[in-house]
Image (cartoon, rainbow, N blue to C red; front, side, top):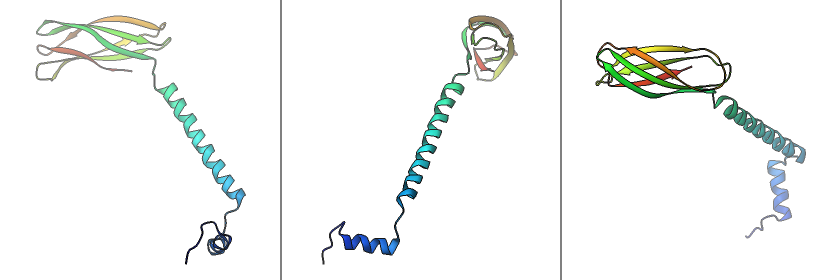
Amino acid sequence: MTMKAGAPDVEQSLAERYGTTSRIRRVTWIVAITALAVGFLAWLVWAALAQGSPGFGAALRSYDVVSNHRVRVLVTVHRAAGTSLVCTVTAQAVDHAIVGEEQVAIQAGPEGDFTVPMSLRTDRRATTATVSSCR
């Protein structure tokens, strides 16, 4: 026996067996899902734009190991207007142990990039320095 898809008696049989969804209910579900998707995408764009770029940052410009217990460091800082920061600079030894750490507080001021010179005291000879955090 061959049945044609979409034949009136087959559609009627399926409707009797499973029931039919009203057009209003289907449209309501489509509108609700679309509204949720649009809301989620709007939130995602807001989060990416507002929270993705904090408006500040710091990078190590240079360092110079001047003795077994001292490292000179230049840190380049970018800040947004009115933002105060606390940046942590660390010095590491050849075995990657932290041998010196210093926090530098940067007062709020105009937006821009500027260089902050620092001198870190170390427990033993350092081989590198890094900006470990800036908040």
